[in-house]
Length: 237
Image 1: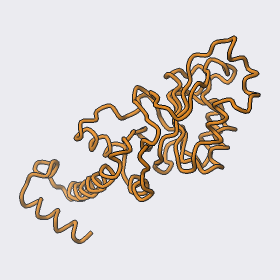
Image 2: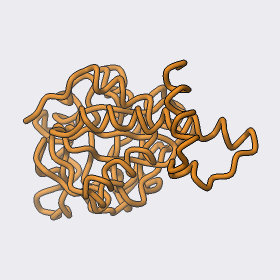
Image 3: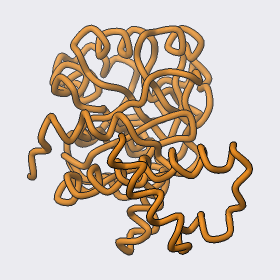
Image 4: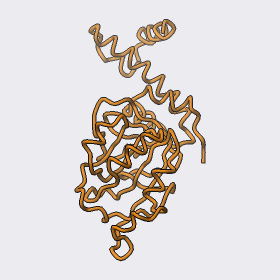
Protein backbone atom coordinates (compact mmCIF):
# COMPACT_ATOMS: atom_id res chain seq x y z
CA UNK A 1 0.00 0.00 0.00
CA UNK A 2 1.42 3.40 -1.04
CA UNK A 3 2.09 5.73 1.88
CA UNK A 4 1.17 9.29 1.02
CA UNK A 5 3.60 12.00 2.12
CA UNK A 6 2.45 14.48 4.76
CA UNK A 7 3.43 17.31 2.43
CA UNK A 8 1.01 15.96 -0.17
CA UNK A 9 -1.79 15.87 2.41
CA UNK A 10 -1.07 19.51 3.30
CA UNK A 11 -1.09 20.60 -0.36
CA UNK A 12 -4.45 18.94 -0.92
CA UNK A 13 -5.93 20.97 1.94
CA UNK A 14 -5.58 24.01 -0.32
CA UNK A 15 -7.64 22.73 -3.27
CA UNK A 16 -11.33 22.06 -3.84
CA UNK A 17 -13.03 18.80 -4.71
CA UNK A 18 -14.20 20.44 -7.94
CA UNK A 19 -10.60 21.08 -8.98
CA UNK A 20 -9.63 17.52 -8.06
CA UNK A 21 -12.55 16.16 -10.10
CA UNK A 22 -11.34 18.05 -13.17
CA UNK A 23 -7.76 16.89 -12.66
CA UNK A 24 -8.78 13.24 -12.31
CA UNK A 25 -11.13 13.51 -15.29
CA UNK A 26 -8.17 14.60 -17.42
CA UNK A 27 -6.41 11.41 -16.29
CA UNK A 28 -9.35 9.25 -17.34
CA UNK A 29 -10.79 8.76 -13.83
CA UNK A 30 -14.44 9.75 -14.15
CA UNK A 31 -16.06 8.09 -11.11
CA UNK A 32 -14.20 9.37 -8.05
CA UNK A 33 -16.89 11.59 -6.48
CA UNK A 34 -18.86 9.76 -3.79
CA UNK A 35 -22.53 10.05 -4.67
CA UNK A 36 -25.28 11.32 -2.34
CA UNK A 37 -22.92 11.96 0.57
CA UNK A 38 -22.76 15.44 2.05
CA UNK A 39 -21.27 17.20 5.07
CA UNK A 40 -23.33 17.33 8.23
CA UNK A 41 -22.33 20.99 8.57
CA UNK A 42 -21.03 23.39 5.93
CA UNK A 43 -18.06 25.68 6.37
CA UNK A 44 -15.62 23.32 8.06
CA UNK A 45 -11.97 23.13 6.91
CA UNK A 46 -11.17 20.85 3.97
CA UNK A 47 -10.83 17.25 5.18
CA UNK A 48 -7.87 15.26 3.83
CA UNK A 49 -6.56 11.87 4.94
CA UNK A 50 -5.79 8.34 3.85
CA UNK A 51 -8.75 5.96 3.77
CA UNK A 52 -9.20 3.40 6.52
CA UNK A 53 -12.26 1.34 5.66
CA UNK A 54 -15.12 -0.47 7.40
CA UNK A 55 -17.58 -2.60 5.46
CA UNK A 56 -21.12 -3.54 6.47
CA UNK A 57 -23.38 -6.22 5.01
CA UNK A 58 -27.10 -6.71 5.67
CA UNK A 59 -27.48 -8.08 9.17
CA UNK A 60 -28.76 -11.57 9.79
CA UNK A 61 -30.77 -11.63 12.99
CA UNK A 62 -29.38 -14.87 14.40
CA UNK A 63 -25.80 -13.61 14.00
CA UNK A 64 -26.29 -9.95 14.83
CA UNK A 65 -28.48 -9.41 17.92
CA UNK A 66 -27.98 -6.20 19.87
CA UNK A 67 -25.74 -8.09 22.31
CA UNK A 68 -22.94 -8.28 19.70
CA UNK A 69 -21.92 -4.76 20.73
CA UNK A 70 -20.68 -6.19 24.05
CA UNK A 71 -17.97 -8.10 22.18
CA UNK A 72 -14.64 -6.23 22.52
CA UNK A 73 -13.71 -7.56 19.08
CA UNK A 74 -16.82 -6.12 17.40
CA UNK A 75 -15.42 -4.76 14.15
CA UNK A 76 -17.16 -1.39 14.34
CA UNK A 77 -15.55 -0.77 17.74
CA UNK A 78 -12.19 -2.13 16.56
CA UNK A 79 -12.25 0.20 13.55
CA UNK A 80 -12.88 3.20 15.80
CA UNK A 81 -9.96 2.23 18.05
CA UNK A 82 -7.53 1.28 15.27
CA UNK A 83 -8.18 3.91 12.58
CA UNK A 84 -4.79 5.67 12.38
CA UNK A 85 -4.30 9.28 13.40
CA UNK A 86 -4.73 11.53 10.38
CA UNK A 87 -6.73 8.95 8.43
CA UNK A 88 -10.38 9.14 7.36
CA UNK A 89 -12.69 6.32 8.41
CA UNK A 90 -14.77 5.46 5.33
CA UNK A 91 -17.78 3.19 5.88
CA UNK A 92 -19.54 1.10 3.25
CA UNK A 93 -23.14 1.05 4.45
CA UNK A 94 -24.55 -0.05 1.07
CA UNK A 95 -26.16 3.40 0.63
CA UNK A 96 -28.67 2.34 3.30
CA UNK A 97 -29.40 4.97 5.96
CA UNK A 98 -32.14 3.00 7.71
CA UNK A 99 -29.63 1.94 10.36
CA UNK A 100 -26.92 4.10 11.87
CA UNK A 101 -23.35 3.65 10.66
CA UNK A 102 -22.18 5.32 13.88
CA UNK A 103 -23.28 7.84 16.48
CA UNK A 104 -21.92 10.79 18.43
CA UNK A 105 -19.99 8.69 20.98
CA UNK A 106 -17.99 6.88 18.30
CA UNK A 107 -17.49 10.09 16.31
CA UNK A 108 -16.22 11.85 19.43
CA UNK A 109 -13.81 9.00 20.13
CA UNK A 110 -12.45 9.24 16.57
CA UNK A 111 -12.02 12.99 16.98
CA UNK A 112 -10.13 12.60 20.26
CA UNK A 113 -7.86 9.99 18.68
CA UNK A 114 -6.81 12.47 15.98
CA UNK A 115 -8.65 10.88 13.06
CA UNK A 116 -9.11 13.36 10.18
CA UNK A 117 -12.78 12.66 9.48
CA UNK A 118 -15.66 10.21 9.06
CA UNK A 119 -17.55 9.26 5.88
CA UNK A 120 -20.46 6.88 5.24
CA UNK A 121 -22.86 6.35 2.36
CA UNK A 122 -25.43 5.45 5.03
CA UNK A 123 -26.39 7.68 7.92
CA UNK A 124 -25.47 8.70 11.46
CA UNK A 125 -27.59 8.78 14.56
CA UNK A 126 -27.11 11.85 16.77
CA UNK A 127 -26.40 13.76 13.57
CA UNK A 128 -26.90 17.20 15.13
CA UNK A 129 -24.40 16.40 17.87
CA UNK A 130 -21.87 15.07 15.37
CA UNK A 131 -22.34 18.18 13.23
CA UNK A 132 -21.34 20.37 16.18
CA UNK A 133 -18.08 18.48 16.78
CA UNK A 134 -14.79 19.98 15.60
CA UNK A 135 -14.59 17.01 13.26
CA UNK A 136 -15.58 16.71 9.56
CA UNK A 137 -18.31 14.12 9.01
CA UNK A 138 -20.22 13.16 5.86
CA UNK A 139 -23.29 10.98 5.38
CA UNK A 140 -26.36 10.36 3.23
CA UNK A 141 -28.97 11.44 5.77
CA UNK A 142 -29.76 10.96 9.49
CA UNK A 143 -30.58 7.42 10.62
CA UNK A 144 -33.38 6.17 12.80
CA UNK A 145 -31.65 5.65 16.16
CA UNK A 146 -33.52 2.48 17.06
CA UNK A 147 -32.56 0.43 13.98
CA UNK A 148 -29.18 -0.59 15.36
CA UNK A 149 -28.87 -4.04 13.87
CA UNK A 150 -29.78 -3.72 10.19
CA UNK A 151 -26.05 -3.51 9.38
CA UNK A 152 -23.47 -6.13 10.31
CA UNK A 153 -19.80 -5.07 10.40
CA UNK A 154 -17.89 -7.64 8.40
CA UNK A 155 -14.45 -6.33 7.39
CA UNK A 156 -11.86 -3.68 8.24
CA UNK A 157 -9.37 -2.02 5.90
CA UNK A 158 -10.31 -3.91 2.77
CA UNK A 159 -11.49 -2.44 -0.56
CA UNK A 160 -15.05 -1.19 -0.31
CA UNK A 161 -17.69 0.60 -2.34
CA UNK A 162 -18.90 3.88 -0.86
CA UNK A 163 -21.50 5.90 -2.74
CA UNK A 164 -20.80 3.96 -5.95
CA UNK A 165 -17.05 4.65 -5.78
CA UNK A 166 -14.32 2.06 -5.17
CA UNK A 167 -12.28 3.01 -2.11
CA UNK A 168 -9.04 1.17 -1.41
CA UNK A 169 -7.20 1.43 1.91
CA UNK A 170 -4.67 4.24 1.62
CA UNK A 171 -6.54 6.16 -1.08
CA UNK A 172 -6.60 9.87 -0.30
CA UNK A 173 -10.01 11.17 0.76
CA UNK A 174 -10.71 14.87 0.27
CA UNK A 175 -13.91 16.44 1.56
CA UNK A 176 -15.29 19.97 1.37
CA UNK A 177 -18.73 21.61 1.26
CA UNK A 178 -19.44 19.98 -2.14
CA UNK A 179 -18.72 16.41 -1.00
CA UNK A 180 -16.02 13.76 -1.20
CA UNK A 181 -13.37 12.94 -3.81
CA UNK A 182 -11.29 9.75 -3.76
CA UNK A 183 -7.72 10.02 -5.12
CA UNK A 184 -5.79 6.80 -5.84
CA UNK A 185 -2.77 6.80 -3.55
CA UNK A 186 -0.24 6.15 -6.32
CA UNK A 187 -1.06 9.45 -8.09
CA UNK A 188 -1.76 11.63 -5.04
CA UNK A 189 1.50 13.58 -5.34
CA UNK A 190 1.03 14.56 -8.98
CA UNK A 191 -2.65 15.34 -8.42
CA UNK A 192 -1.76 17.66 -5.54
CA UNK A 193 0.82 19.50 -7.66
CA UNK A 194 -1.46 19.82 -10.68
CA UNK A 195 -4.40 20.97 -8.57
CA UNK A 196 -2.34 23.70 -6.93
CA UNK A 197 -1.41 24.98 -10.38
CA UNK A 198 -5.06 24.82 -11.45
CA UNK A 199 -6.08 26.71 -8.30
CA UNK A 200 -3.50 29.38 -9.03
CA UNK A 201 -4.84 29.78 -12.57
CA UNK A 202 -8.41 30.06 -11.31
CA UNK A 203 -7.32 32.83 -8.94
CA UNK A 204 -5.94 34.71 -11.96
CA UNK A 205 -9.17 34.11 -13.88
CA UNK A 206 -11.32 35.44 -11.03
CA UNK A 207 -9.20 38.58 -10.80
CA UNK A 208 -9.63 39.19 -14.53
CA UNK A 209 -13.38 38.53 -14.51
CA UNK A 210 -13.89 40.93 -11.61
CA UNK A 211 -12.12 43.57 -13.73
CA UNK A 212 -14.62 42.94 -16.53
CA UNK A 213 -12.58 40.57 -18.72
CA UNK A 214 -14.54 38.29 -21.08
CA UNK A 215 -14.06 34.56 -20.56
CA UNK A 216 -13.35 34.09 -24.29
CA UNK A 217 -9.65 33.38 -24.59
CA UNK A 218 -9.32 33.44 -20.80
CA UNK A 219 -11.15 30.32 -19.69
CA UNK A 220 -9.74 28.16 -21.16
CA UNK A 221 -6.57 30.20 -21.61
CA UNK A 222 -5.96 30.49 -25.36
CA UNK A 223 -5.32 34.21 -25.93
CA UNK A 224 -1.57 34.86 -26.41
CA UNK A 225 -1.67 38.22 -24.61
CA UNK A 226 -3.47 36.70 -21.61
CA UNK A 227 -1.05 33.77 -21.54
CA UNK A 228 1.80 36.24 -21.25
CA UNK A 229 -0.05 38.18 -18.55
CA UNK A 230 -0.64 34.99 -16.60
CA UNK A 231 3.06 34.08 -16.70
CA UNK A 232 3.98 37.54 -15.38
CA UNK A 233 1.23 37.30 -12.76
CA UNK A 234 2.59 33.94 -11.54
CA UNK A 235 6.09 35.40 -11.18
CA UNK A 236 4.72 38.15 -8.95
CA UNK A 237 2.93 35.52 -6.88
